Length: 178
Image (cartoon, rainbow, N blue to C red; front, side, top):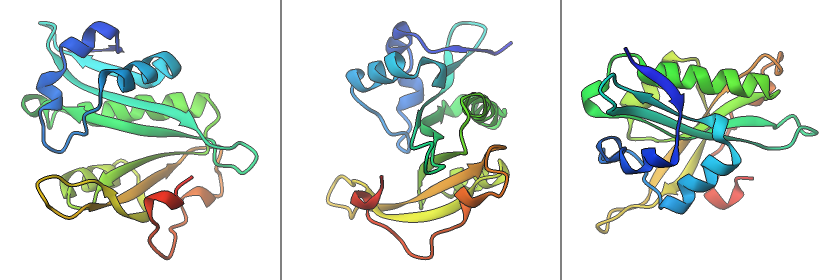
C-alpha cells in the first residue's frame, strides 16, 4: 500500500529516481530545505511499501489576502516513471489543494512547460485552466532557446466568482510576475 506522508530531510537522499526525469525541475539542497522549513505541510511524498519514493509534491502559500491573491503554489510535482498512471499525481495535487483550502486560499497555481502536453492535459483533467503564458520562463541548456510556460490555475471555494482564473489576454515576461 502506498503511504502519503510529510517529506523529511532523509528523503533528500532517496529521491533521485524521481528527479532524474528530464522534465522535472531540480534544485539545490538549500532550496528543498527552505521549503521544508517554511511550508512543511505543502511538502508531501508518496512512498512504496518497500520504502522506495514514488513521487512528491512541493509547494507553498503566497500572495496578498487584501488583493484576493492569497493562494497555494505548486513548485514541483513529480512521479517516478515506474509509478506513473496510478493516480499519484492527482492524489498529491488533491492534498495540496485541501491544504490551500484550509489556509484560506483563493486558488492554486503552477507553472508548466508549454511543450509538456502530458502534464498540461493532466492538469486540465484536474480542473486547471491556463491563466497566462509566461514568455521564456524556463531556461534552456545546450544552446536551445528558452521555453515558455503556462501559468495554470484552479479556483478554490473562497473565490466563489472564480475571478482568479479569468485568463489574461496577453503573455507576460518572468519579471512581470509578482
